[in-house]
Length: 337
Image (tube, rainbow, N blue to C red; front, side, top):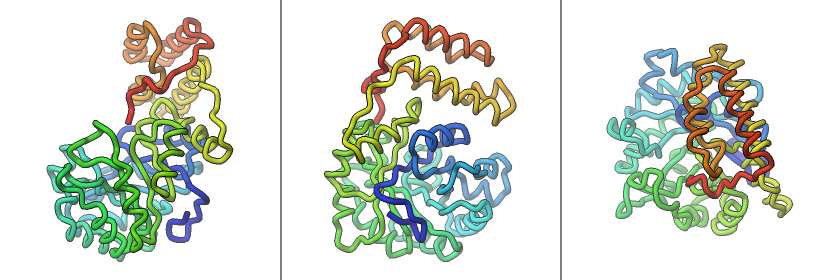
């Protein structure tokens, strides 16, 4: 698979862009454990053209990141074009346009998945951004607005005509948010459409290696994008890659191994932020997902999510390892789609 002139090999695995999740330390962990392509957190075009420092900081890329994209969202075509130039200055390998975010704070401004209700505007926005930069431009999209409005095949053709170099499709509508199940049959329709020549990347419900293989065989997609199932389980990329290439499922990870990896991510976050309490606050979303399915875990989990110092977190992690030593972690109980 290629994005522009960027060679990504056979069936690359993408880490989906996620707000307050795909920052430095999490990207590092996912890259270390097998992700091929990184994305930063998505950035607002309006904030960029106003030079909001917090937004500019999200675009900082590190030596381990490439190949990496920066995802941009907005409702105004002029602002998106101006912002794309600022994204290009950050020197990602490609720029991605967010046409899929379902969150109310994004869609009520006419951005993200709201553009699924106005395909001509979506197409024109993509066309103008492509013209404005020298980098490849990709897009991420959903099936449609709701069950009665799923224009994904038409939308994909329009985006390809606009010059989009690759398309990632989340197999849900905006109305579904992250509930129910992803409909991969429609992703397959896009991939098998004889008009489509750009790579199609499948996203949604890739909760493990066997599911990944099933979805590839069902649709023939060129790549897979993993989002929330990687939170608390960054090694899911290695598990999927090993199964797709060798047909072998790895043994379940034990609590001791998960404790070690949680501690590794915490250390990297603390080193990066140089502010212990802020680093621990950032890690709470990840800690909440690291130990699914453990019996009698609620009280310990509460303690872990309330801890405010590195020493306190480390002490709780040691306690988890002592109580649940050698016990396998069941990610089927993580409740992620």
